[in-house]
Image (cartoon, rainbow, N blue to C red; front, side):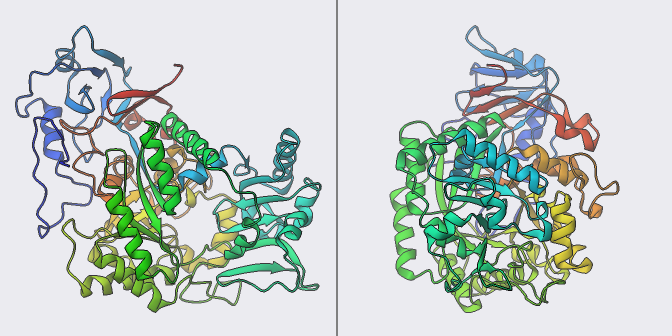
Length: 585
């Protein structure tokens, strides 16, 4: 399938051995510039089905701002002045007045867990609960509002909300004494469960820690405290009633609606099982997949050649469509810093451990080499400096072992919270994409009083070093990690611009040298993800022939001070040239 389908503009793919374009530059920039200046190649005599006028149209990748765009079918027809675009209007053309708001490519969230996100919309949301009393109040209210549910499920609590950094089962028993309850931490790496849930899971003093997991125990009694880290969470999850297929499809529909409301037209799902991928296939077959999805299939420790062949078969059975594709695998190199499970080169500042790597080095190297040799793109969750280094090392070995596939290598590391200074230049050297989620760096107490304290000041000085990676020549793509945080891009944009909380703290910012300019942030949430999913020739920027995935914002964000940019609203979301969300519709 060509990138531009039936459109009049034809674009040649970059030869496999050609040097890569600059960090955000894609082959569409010259078209965007020409279209924005009104001096591009002669447009076909095609009337517009939809036009957006009177806006601040940012084509992307540094192209000059225009005023309007015209859409024909599912592609952009032209970018130019309002006067020029009005000339393409017919009696049947739909007109959207942007009222001087920003018009840009739809947000492409490069790291989500879409099914979990949809499920979280129907569970206790604890993300904004800043202390124990607030957390308990939210759980209590949800349980009271849903007395018919046999389990009380939720997620989003922060380590910093609890004295000592971790909750206890007694605190959950206080508000849900009559049925099992499981609250997953915001990062997904720790679960907080009550006594009934522990009993149903059969967890006692005698239960051993599973591989890559920890049952937190009372140091005096040896009893489980109600906190399960990493793979120990599975001990409870296996007894939580499974959702039906229709329940899961309903959760995905909720997720689609949420994405459209927030101007998100594409998502990259960082780790799905094959049966979950089949749910996306089902939604697309029902014409209900109202967002573009690039899904990375999960590759756990011990992943075998037989499993790899099965994934190859999934790829053959489900070739790319305009709305859905795979071709990537996701691995977890380590855990998280807050729970002391991220892999570090030196011990934590406040605990004699270097974390829990999920793979033996030889196993990680084997899997990366195997999947790289088969032409798969690889995502690796790596948060601590040791996890990041072992992943970069694995990519370097795989690159040396076999030639690049025809489409090139675009392997990625996800999160990159605490990178060694020595490894920052290796992203550019190896062509590894830094996939980062800015709102994780929001300097609330969870970050300043738990994350930073666990690392110590020297390592914390390189917290979420996205600008350092860019300055060293690396590539950046941004997202949210929903439901770890909300799918809404605005908080993450604010963090990337200011390195401060939503209410402006601390005054000087947390690691202020890592602030990014707005144009870079927008590009890294649109063009950057398109490159990271091998789709820069068809989406991520606004130019003639590109897919008509567009978002209209309530204000010209480029005229706002950095701390006010987050105050925009999504007015209209357009996917494939059709309005899928309109504020007040």
